[in-house]
Amino acid sequence: MKSQLFVAVLVVGLVMSAVPSSACSNTTIQGSWGFLLAGANSNKLTAVVGQITADGKGGLTGSETISSNGVISPDVALTGTYSITTACTGMATITPSGFPAAKYNLTVVSTGKQIEMVDTATGSTEFGYALARGTSTCTDAAVKGTFGFEGGGFNSSLVPKAFAGQVKLDGAGNLTGTETASVGGTIASGPISGTYSVNSDCTGSVSVTFKTKKFINNFVIVNGDKSALEISTDSGDITTTTVAKQ
Image (cartoon, rainbow, N blue to C red; front, side, top):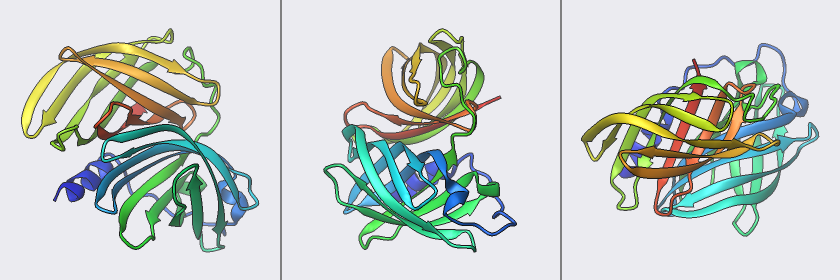
């Protein structure tokens, strides 16, 4: 039941996307991507957010932050391979440093700007998606304006939680906004405040205070500075967030 709720949370906010009308190949997904995965692996609830670069020839490199039952492994280097067919489907093998290799079936959609992913390992129930980074400046000053966000997962007691709200980034590393959260069905609403820092490679971190509690996430910028994928780095948390500019 818990894993079903978690993967349902991941789907919120996604829209149906069309497969590209033209034939695909390995070059279709060449470039930098942010990705988000969630589900269960060997009876452990999992969440992963990272950044990966496809070289157009079947090679992958990047890094990711992993939460496995709330045990956080940040900034894990990864390598891999991929193959995209003319039908815009394919496969990828991704190996995070110090972890077993994972195999995924892929579908390229949204005119080559999104990849749907499902883990094909026996015993794993994990799925997600990747979004192209696009043309991004990737500085605090470039990532500014008003954004909507939503997310969820589980806290350190494995109580399910969900949240959504609006946040304003000032371009100087500061944020303010409002949030509504449900933790085990208990609802709370109120203001949020915090700070953010964007790295030159379009990754970064954000610290948000809500109801006197501080939450820290790692994030990856996608969609040309207009969206971000986030994962909690708080010990015990298995939580992801999606952010989109209004």
